[in-house]
Image 1 (cartoon, rainbow, N blue to C red):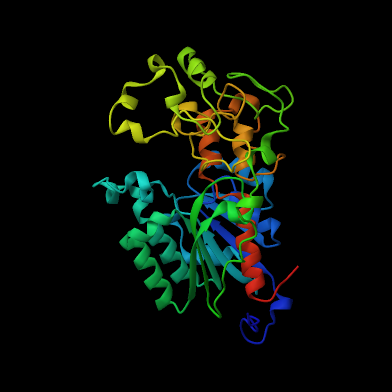
Image 2: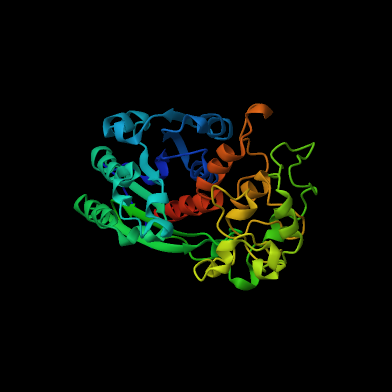
Length: 361
């Protein structure tokens, strides 16, 4: 791919640095990945103030607790250092675009529906050199995505987007995401895939070494390595669950009424155990709950812990999600972890942008 060349008025890339702002930053999965790629992130913006501690503790960035719809491009441009190559990134909350809401007739009334339009507005107002957007693949079915693409074209961006199968980039979960890259100068593409099914990073590779804990218990040395307490009937269910199996492995009296219905029979991953030598399923905001997906530990009789979920999202083990132990909430930290862009995907996005403009390190 050709070198990016001069950005403006004869200033060379080698004399400038890429600086990013992260919209909808959450606790910083994308920010941390970009920083690991060598891109500076000056600020993350998110309306959820509960993300502030983890975002600032783990990243050399400022957390701005503000609704993106209330931010202006002028405010963004004040955050970028003078002369920097400007990168604006973001993952608008994706639940309203997910597979689960495709049949929801009222989904366009969800306040999150318009956030991608605000992302586009901020691009038009701040005119960054590069843009990256990450979201669920289903977003392509909606007019808002078409409008986003058309808006970028009107702003003279070169656009690339790809549906990414995360295990093919060394991420240990079967997360499928759409990644978009846009550039003012020349087309930039995501780096080539690095893995195939024979060498996928597996659950065993990532969490096997962690200490054993029982459901409802906490590891003494790592307070995030804690597991949700199972009900007595769920303890019986998980004891009869096999790696990669289904609730069909259970005794008849342990099955739920919905399983016996025609519609319920299709949801065989719910209450399932993971398999050691496979990537994990997509880590959702409820991954700590045994009954919300295939989140049973491969061999221990419990759901995966908060720490295990974070590791499968490729957060480093020293990433701090709470300041005081009494602040740990399964629902809040589960949301923080499940909503994050996997750190390693953020790193790949950053390296792809750098490679596309001839910065290789």
